[in-house]
Length: 317
Length: 259
Ligand SMILES: Cc1cc2nc3c(=O)[nH]c(=O)nc-3n(C[C@H](O)[C@H](O)[C@H](O)COP(=O)(O)OP(=O)(O)OC[C@H]3O[C@@H](n4cnc5c(N)ncnc54)[C@H](O)[C@@H]3O)c2cc1C
Ligand SMILES: Nc1ncnc2c1ncn2[C@@H]1O[C@H](COP(=O)(O)O)[C@@H](O)[C@H]1O
Image (cartoon, rainbow over all chains, first blue to last red):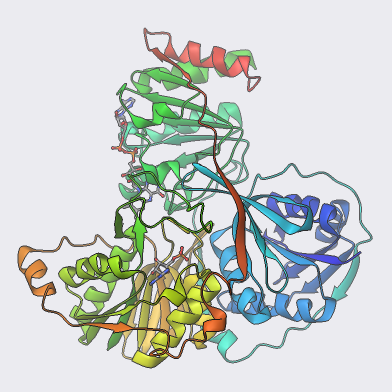
């Protein structure tokens, strides 16, 4: 069976859930090979990738790979495409994942499909476009299929693979080293689940009113074991850090449940949450467009409703 | 400094957007064309850099004849001139084809700095800037929420999952911007009038030495094989808070087994 390359997403050696989803998808398309780029590879990481089906694990853990923007990762994958002749390559549809896929497409003269929400036989990709308004099926017609897949597109299922490790040295060109990362600034993350991976997301918007009042949103999120999101109005106002912005220029989330409090539902916000399975909206304006999407909506003041909901959730635990 | 801003015309997100059943490409006649929002931020950043460091701002758009409206908008904001890449052979190009066409044109017109939006509202691929950097062999300074230039040194703050990275490089470079970077100016009446007289050069595939085997629908590396309008979401239940809104929401969540 031909190999299907999966680029591993990890932060400080911790593998992201989306990688396990990609391995699960890859198993249906061929023999999954995980490609690990950058430092932090550990036996625990190897075990995890193997548990979810990796037959091979290619490891390029030189510091250099992550010292420069995107190009080295694309070079690493291109090298594997040349040596392993895979049937396709799967990358997480994060902002950076898409950039890696784009450069890889040029290096390997192959087509790239971004933001797939599913992959059928023969690497036929399913996409949801125009803010969820149109469903599209597309395929790569030249070269090997390079597909970026949105987090939460499938449920990760363990099914152990062979897990054979192979070290890879990536030869970087001067062009690969043209944009150097000189500092990484990590902003608070906290103990909540990762926004793009969470099963439940509770988001606050301008209606929350202040940075302090975001604690109302956080308390509900914590009661539900959810991630916290924010609209652009809230991140622009400095009430919540930008990496929690949901929408066209923030994160795209597809949780089981999305709760929007004090968010009007502008098209740019909808672009990031429209594919949530269940949507609950809390807004004092009955005309707010978010209610068009809501499975359940409450017209009223979020400062009354959200704390009451939090209390009810705690009670039922 | 020679700054080129890549600007795209997209269908207005406020109108109904469609694919054409003829060839499964975007139906550009179905909706009004407007400037892609993030491209306005790219134009604004180019103007700011010009104001601080001198130079000239050129708008580069690949798109059908009606994309001139979008070019005029960027010129009205203050860009100096434009290049409009327009040719039937380009219709239906995918990201690889578009990046080839734009890269060839950029080589032709020359640049110290290329600025793009990080994503368009229609294709939403977000790959163009990375692809241009790859094709041009220039540093990729993408997803910038801040750009600083000092002589030929350029540095950005690149938005990441965990915060941001400080990234440095040397010009020439390709930059893409996120919406946190600035607040785009509105064109003034004077700007709108002046835009009418600013030079817009039209390029066809031959002028930019674009390889026609790499652009257009037939040469696309990917294709849409089928599409269907998504079934509308079933209408939800909307209730008014009578002091028990939170409790009602909890009942709903319980009925769906979330709690
Ligand atoms: C290029 C570009 C990119 C963008 N990207 C994004 C993006 O990624 N994400 C994003 O979210 N937006 C994005 N936007 C912005 C978007 O257009 C909206 O401006 C934004 O989503 C509005 O945020 P909001 O709903 O919180 O604020 P508003 O639209 O001001 O809505 C606030 C809502 O809160 C309600 N409210 C107020 N007080 C209360 C209360 N006490 N109780 C209950 N309800 C209350 C109001 O009725 C109102 O409906 C983008 C815009 C542009 C131009
Ligand atoms: N046809 C085009 N002409 C000029 N610039 C473009 C074109 N298509 C995309 N771009 C640029 O690429 C960015 C990202 O677009 P996309 O990859 O479609 O999400 C846009 O914000 C533009 O700056």
